[in-house]
Length: 323
Image 1: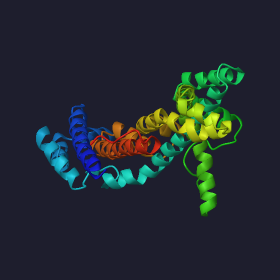
Image 2: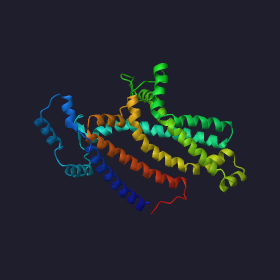
Image 3: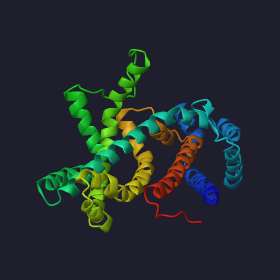
Image 4: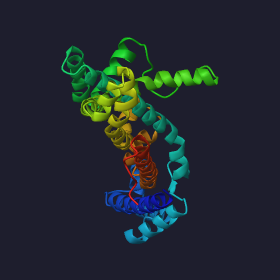
């Protein structure tokens, strides 16, 4: 295990370095920079002042020199400075990261739980009325774009019915206290989490159904039934554990996709997360902040993939770590 972890961590460092250099070259190939944005907002700005600002921000150096300096700074924990926020990039990202992490974690938990239960029920009643109805609902979830789901739920539950808050993570001037704050945040997260989860509920349901149908034909399941175990014990104690392997794989991929999908969802619902921060950074040409967001998200995704590989060995002892 120790050798495997050391090798994976070394591979992860190489992957992150490649991501840093690739994104640095890509972002700096885009026309315009922070000084151009400042000149546009401030009206007329003479060429001498713009040149002075580029020298101050280090934008006057050749691209290879800037990339080497940036990679060296990242290795020491310095992700740069966000001039619009007057703060280090790492501090700005860490301030927004909890909201996005909460959104992603809740979305994964809801989609895995609901999707797995739906898939197990459909497999248990395969080719019958329950399976047909659940399959139709799942197909509707899968065919509806996330942004359309978000806008529709916002229109119905916030605008028309007024049951849930329209936007934001908390209510301004809300009652203080841990329980009151948690309840207020939960109400604000219902629509974003639901809109992100519905598409993946459909995927998990189909995966769980197909995997359960395959597992239920295995010899060890027949043996468990022959021993006189109840159907609930057979499903939960023998079949579901092995049927969860493709679901776990998809969960790791979902976390990766949700960090990208958070840009749209957080923009629609006005959540103060990393996705909304990235959206604002793109339009302000804040390249240090954009790179910092990519680095932090890449680091999280690499750790999640490692955790998924380790979880595999817990779910199925037959799966061995590649030494």
